[in-house]
Length: 295
Image 1: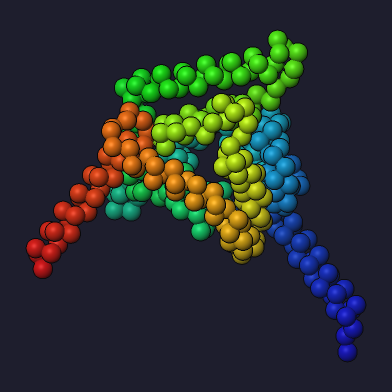
Image 2 (image 1 turned 180 degrees about the vertical axis):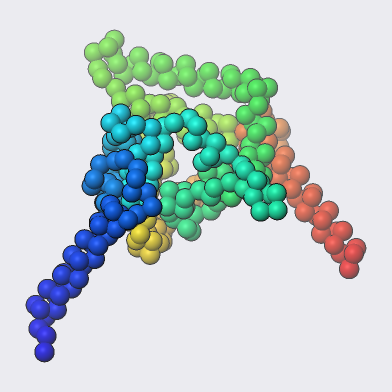
């Protein structure tokens, strides 16, 4: 007969043996064992998790490259490259089965840790990525950017004025990252929704902007948990979090409705999306009509 204490001791012993097995496998038998890196990161994913959620991972990895060279093993299943020759091998298309273009898929751990989130240009597959990129490209052309230059310049000028006011002739220190973020959101709000978030005007973050920045920080923790293999926990936490972001989603939906109500054409990023949307709708209707004709 086993007592609760003996059962707990047995469980702890089994866990310890399993962890020792993982460390031994990762260090001596893993396919990536020949790549250099610090022992603790080659043996366990926990160090990368810690550096990632604390926001220091990028600085840590940079230092490791100065020690170990252009290829560093920063996790049991994770390599970091700085050699430019690796770019084509990792990101470029290559011939696949049947001669079709093939590219390495993006890691769900970093690009789709939250499965319930809609697909974006950052995590879409090759075909959908190409479609989204094609829709966005006209808004980033040289001609389009020149038309948007007065809007962008206006916000840059406002940024300079606000910095001068808050620096007080260099007497006060300012968080420049905060002001750059506010400028970016104001510019994108104007070019996408035809209205600014007012961060620079009010010298403070809009509630929606604050929510986005908080989400970015929180999502790093979810990514870290996904990196450790706790995908179920990530799914539960993200579902709970979505309940508290409903009002911010409603705010974006209201801004989107307002932008769609603008009748005149604007030389902004959203206009190109609207034109592509109309084109996709026409193509879908045409394909549907042809299908009905065939049958």
